[in-house]
Image (cartoon, rainbow, N blue to C red; front, top):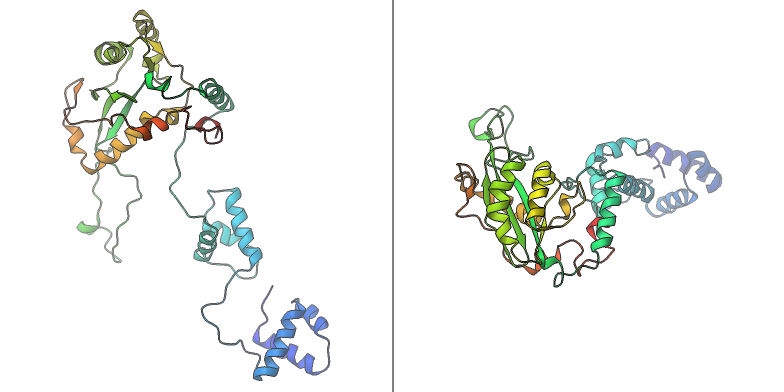
Length: 331
């Protein structure tokens, strides 16, 4: 509801003293009758139509405004506060910070979004189908036999554009205000590894591109096959081209390796992604510790994957601790 200016209050008071009804005055100024009633009570008590002293700044939004802001951002989570401030109906434009304050009161805060794969309808159907097929798998009877493998690329220097510097005006190019970074990203290293609930493989450093021939001869034969000696062992890999090449599939078939079918565009379902994320955070603190592994495919002497951990075991897709409501495939 609009607020009456000081001039409008004086006019409303004069009409009240002239005998006009409160409802008629309220209709003229497009306010509620209670507004005129409170104005009259205040004048009789204080002899003035000015606002009474109050603690803090008057609230700039009404309950309807707050609901509009909340629902607008719940319907589109990527809207900015400035766009909502411009779209809010009313004679005065709210500040962006006021919109943020109302969102904070509703429990909505700006966070860095998770970057997920682009999923088509067919991708989602395949994920749900895979999840239903493995929904009753348990860690004790099934998942403990699965070796989850993955290749991961570690950047030696990470610059995501979110770093800030506190500086004065005209200090943009001051040496202590410049964030120095390599022009082409600083390079990185590619590693391969595998984990299951009982242990982990050796972390293998891969240099350059790895076609199917190199994948078989330098990773599967020397590193993966020893892990799959148990007849109940199951090997998991994503659908990258070297993994699905005829040479790779024939090699796994000849060595009687049981491969876990994997839906496409589903890296978030692989529990080793959690391990790689932890490794990236650790590597970010001392990136040169990874850079020491140069020279083809070899072992990193200081690299470690987490050993058996019940927390990692519970994150395995389709494990007994995952209900249908919280299953990652069904979200």
